[in-house]
Length: 361
Length: 262
Image (cartoon, rainbow over all chains, first blue to last red; front, side, top):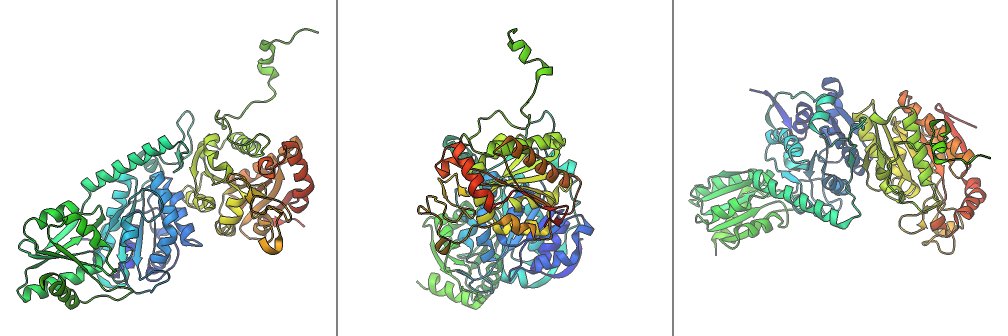
């Protein structure tokens, strides 16, 4: 059993980064995720593992430090919250085009604009539909506990290198700020420079005599080549869709009504399932772990087993609900419920919405 | 007088100039008369002469030199507009024993990338920045740059740069020289053989500083022409540069071994 600690989600993410053998973290403070860089600076991972930690002058600069550092083939990451993540979109688009592996976390707060520092899940569209310019995707992992804030760092780095892609840990102000028991995985040693070079022949290490040099770029002025590159990217995303879908079913075996939720909304909806069952309503929870790839086929298959209605529960005006509708393709009624702008819905409100919007009619 | 044959010319003892193998054979995308080709060549010659090529990573900008990675035969990364110093920071922090340089134009470095430039300089990142200043946005068709001189015409200052309306040109090289993180700051040109020799010496010193792990960033500005953007012949552009650009952007070392001159 790994080391047990009581930690904030943000702290667990930071500690997990050190333990996952991360080579560098580049960040910029923003509420509610500043504990990530604060924890790292206090912990001095450069003494523990040799990990680099640098506070950049902006989120723009931090993601471009990640872009540069990722080109070396090493394990690099950043984190921020919604307004800062918007600033990172330029760099993320370049990272997608240049196919570099990296990990980043968004501890989402309410928007639009400066919005609020309270929790939100209103960055779903930005996270799953591209975010920056161009046709691209990124793997999105949605932790619903402090434990998963830690575990998804390790998983995220594995997926990032498996596919040479940016992996986003899409958290929110609740998961980032709350404290829970967490079992920390045992530290993985950082790779040596020789191992990094051997594992990543594409990475910039300096052109050795008589070898092919490495160019990291997202540019090709020849449109036919750029189309080929885009087709290659789409094929990669298809493979990810095929192989990396992750979700959790809670009380869905006999469920007539299913809540679909991720992150802190899934924790809340889990309580709503209990409240519903106590009233004799056969409710279940479809908890999304990966938002891209979205478990659409799995959702449709479950729907055909006799689900009467779905309630998408998210702290937004209704974003994920669109993907639920596209997935079940009219098999059953789909509605959305969520408080937003920094308000967190209660389990009772969620159950009431199920009764009124789905069961009532 | 005996006839000189091709066989005589190609004898090794008659060799007076050889293209550095660190420049690829790709045809340069620059306009005839542009200084970029020379600036590329002397940068690559320095890397070759110092024997750094196997451990060098360069960063290409956005602008006329966006395709620098096609011509410079070392490992290269192409950055977003203005972000090259941030990329270089990330790479140098993870490969502290390798040589990292950026190659940027004036729009890239002194407008959209001002924050990245100033903070990389101020942190004293142990990298080299080669900054080519031709006072205009060449790639996009000759728009006003942060470095366009007062009164100078461009497609977005067609009646000349009116400083009251459009602001003043930015002397970013003097600015970064003031920062404690810069170790060597020099302004050079590449329009005459003598200027090229001086510029190459400055670039060599910059790369030596990085090789020797000197405390801080080495920043070389090359004041260059843009005959296409300035709507002049190459010769006229060079003359105009000497008469107008050099008085505003005077050539020479500004900071050496961490000490401001003057």
